[in-house]
Image (cartoon, rainbow, N blue to C red; front, top):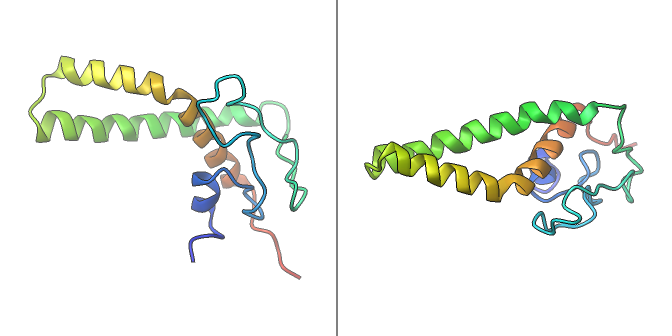
Length: 123
């Protein structure tokens, strides 16, 4: 049910077309020497992951959206539910965002390419 969807591709580091081949060379976003290394093509369906020059610059918009959503959720949890001070929220948000940067980088790239790649047509 969930396996052949764009959400599956984004969450599990899979090809946006066939949802089977890996997108990044390692599944661990915190392997800092290789967190940004992508395959050039999908091993399963041969989808090209290296679009035109500057394609992934648009992933900054996806990263911004994910960061705003995370910040809003953290704010609602900390300040509204637990009545924390704004300074506590700011420190928690800054430190956690710094730790999440490799993960956000990957998810924003996967989200961006999933917006532009259609599902594989079965013949």
